[in-house]
Image 1 (cartoon, rainbow, N blue to C red):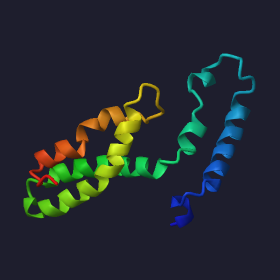
Image 2: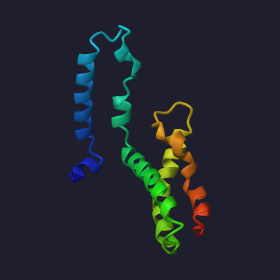
Image 3: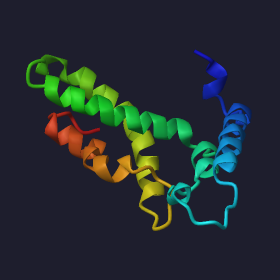
Image 4: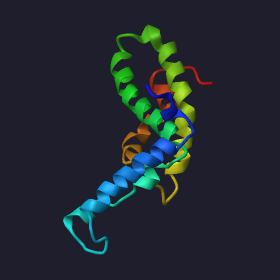
Length: 132
């Protein structure tokens, strides 16, 4: 794994964004022309240049892992403490995303509205985790 991808250095992200932008520009020759290519809005810079992209990634994986934990929990409730620790570690990133995504105008991914029910505070109660 390329650990520089996880650093605060946005150079690789900028290179990727520029490459995507070049491809997009070749597809959509005239930005004023309305075509079926223009149905997708271009948000590459907003998505790729976010300072909080690592936290967004953490939140996304938290959502994915929560569904797995939720299915396993009834059969492995003796591991509740381990599940609760994992959820607690991810709650900081979730709180940041929650604060950013509740603003009226934000560039939050569509997954936020779908998975906001997995708020760690709600999950703690569902899994009967001790509140901290």
